[in-house]
Structure formats: structure tokens, C-alpha cells
Length: 181
Ligand code: HEM
Ligand code: HEM
Image (spheres, rainbow, N blue to C red):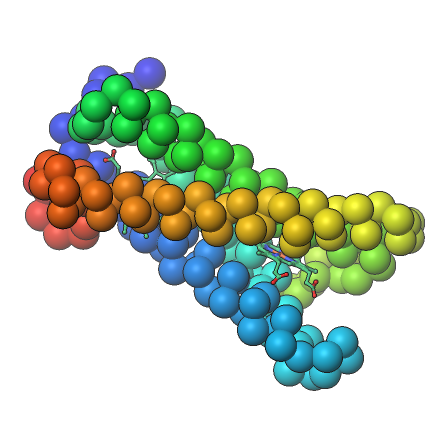
């Protein structure tokens, strides 16, 4: 384990805020896609971007985990219940951001749909069709895991703003880009 640093490393800050932007984009696309009928080309375009941003989130999260395990994090600030809650929410978000894209890919495999990454390359279908499995994964991905991640991000954001405006303890400030605090 690395020694406890006093600040977030610039790469962890960069990966954290990139993950936020990319995950928000993936969610906005899929929610907007819900407003179009099946077969509508606009829905297809929005899902193309949902999947591409989702795969980007997977790559960024793998990089985040590798960096985090190598560089550690500054001492968390707050009461013990806050630290326990924050840590549970953090690791649940990490697991979901790894699991959601993998589930999305598996769902596409069973539905016999290749997945394009921003039109640069495609992940081909290599598994046999299994409509029941695709439907079950869809239920877990779109009905539970996706909405749970969105809820955790909201809770996490409320926590960050609580630290900033109520506890006034510098937790949000030290995650912001710029000079190390
Ligand atoms: C971090 C990455 C991802 C997140 C946070 C995420 C989140 C979500 C959410 C919240 C929904 C439900 C939307 C709604 O019903 O309004 C959804 C649906 C879906 N996602 Fe993802 N997803 C991610 C990655 C992926 C990937 C990589 C793929 C495919 C390769 C994928 C394929 C789908 C599909 C096919 C649906 C169903 C859309 C529909 O019912 O019309 N997702 N996703
Ligand atoms: C998809 C969106 C987000 C994800 C997946 C995410 C994920 C994470 C994770 C996993 C950590 C824990 C780091 C660790 O323990 O090593 C963290 C820390 C943090 N996040 Fe987020 N985050 C997101 C959005 C946000 C937003 C919108 C804000 C602020 C408004 C925010 C503020 C913070 C702060 C201040 C910390 C540092 C906490 C500390 O120093 O104890 N995050 N985030």
C-alpha cells in the first residue's frame, strides 16, 4: 500500500471529473433515447452515444482503480458515520461503473448486436443468440443497476456539497483542479 498522500494526485482528479462528465453524458443520452419510438433513427444515434460513452467510462474506471491502488488517497475528513457512508457509496459506484458497461456488452452479445465505439471500431458478436438472457440483463442494467448508480451519484454530490457548505471542511476544494490544497 502507498503511504497516505496529503492531496489528491492530479491524475486521480482528472480521472474523477472525466468520469463524472462521461457518465453524465451516457445517462443523458439514454434518458433522451427513451423519448423516441423503437426504430426511430434519432433513438439509434442516442443509443450509439450511450454505448460509446459507457465503454469510455469502463476504460476510465479501470485507469482510476489502477491509479488509486498505486497512489492512495488523502485522509478522509468527517465524523465516523460520514466516513463509513462515503466509503460504501464510493466503492458501490466503482463496482457499478465497472459492471454496467460489461452487462451492456453482454446484453448486446445475447441480442446479436455489435457495439460501435464512436464509429472508430466495433466489438463483434461472438456469443449465440439468447433472447431470455438479453431480456434479464436488460432488466438488471436498465431497471436496477443504472438507476441505483444515478441515485448514488446524487447522494455523493449532496455529500460533497454538505462538506462544502455545512461542514466547510475543504473536502470539495481539494478535489478541484488547480493548485494542491
Ligand atoms: C457506465 C456506463 C453505463 C451507464 C451508467 C448506463 C446506464 C443506463 C441506464 C440508467 C439505463 C436505463 C435508461 C432508462 O430506462 O431511462 C440504460 C439502458 C441501456 N443501456 Fe446502459 N449504461 C452504461 C453502459 C452501457 C453500455 C456499454 C451499453 C452497451 C454496450 C449499454 C446499453 C444499454 C441498453 C441497450 C439500454 C436499454 C435502453 C432501452 O431500454 O431502450 N449501456 N443504461
Ligand atoms: C458519476 C459521477 C461520480 C463518480 C462515479 C464519483 C466517484 C467518486 C469516488 C469513487 C470517489 C472516492 C475516491 C476514493 O475514496 O478514493 C470520489 C471522491 C470525491 N468526489 Fe466524486 N464522483 C462523481 C461525481 C462527483 C460530483 C458531481 C462531485 C461534487 C459535486 C464529487 C465530489 C467528490 C469529492 C469532493 C470527492 C473527495 C472526497 C474526499 O476527499 O473524501 N464527485 N468520487
